[in-house]
Structures are given as C-alpha cells and as structure tokens.
Image (tube, rainbow, N blue to C red; front, side):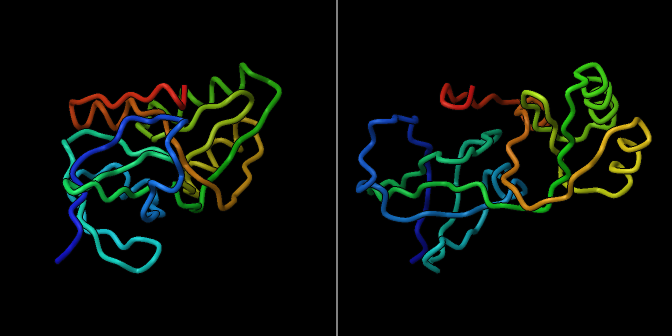
Amino acid sequence: MMLALTRIIPFDSQTDSQAVNATASLPIEQRVRSRLRVTLDDGREAGLFLQRGQLLRDNDLLSSDDGFIVKVIAAAETVSTVRSDDLTLLAKAAYHLGNRHVPLQVEAGWLRYLHDHVLDAMVEQMGLTVQIEQAKFEPEAGAYQQMSGAAHHHAHYE
C-alpha cells in the first residue's frame, strides 16, 4: 500500500529530527503540485494528497494520517543565477522576467530562475552576467499562488 501524505505540518525549529521518518528531494515542478506520486529518497513510493495551491518549501514537513513524517528537500536543478551590485539593473531584469511570468527567486544582490537560454540572452543583453549552475530553486510564491488561487505562508523563509 502506498504511503499517503495528506498534510503539511507547521514549521517548528524545535521539531526533533528523530521524528522525521524519511526525506523527499523534489524539484520545483513537483513542489507546486498538490496531487502527485513521488519516490522518497529511500526508494519508497508515496502519494501527495494536499490542499490545492500549496507550494512546498525546502524543510517543510509532510505527514500521513498515521503520523509518518517526511521532510521535503528542495532538489538541486539547473538554474540561471544573475548577480549584480547594480540593484537598479537587477530590478530591471526582475521586471522583464516577471513580465514574461517567469517564476523568480529574488534575493539580496541576485535573481534565479529555471535555466532557459532565451531568457539568459535577454538578461545578458541588459549587461548582466548569467551563471548556469545546479542549485535549489525557491521562487517567490506569488506566481504559483495566483495560478492556484490559494496561499501558503511560512514564517521560516521570510
């Protein structure tokens, strides 16, 4: 019988790590879906049966009805990262990427999006340098929330 993960446990930095029974390394494509079959890092199969519109973040905890706990790990994936000390230029890049509805991770002095050579060329034409790398991708939740019509809020990543 497949493990059914039905709820997100509120983040608590005091949660005993021994309470975690397994981990699931998931790319963003899987972390935005509420109904999904996944393979846990130990090879077991599980099904996500979550409320629609919930964006899973790195370190979120999922639980089955019988208390089995799975820690979500944001898997490294191919991303384009743009770093600059010129915050105005970085803001312009964010504006143009957002205008194309590109999910975007925005941090102090850098932006990240899923790698796309066309977007890379656009950003480079603006005078910025794009670094293609394997890294965790934690985009702003807004675009995914708008698509689903629901909100998912965690104080631990703000």
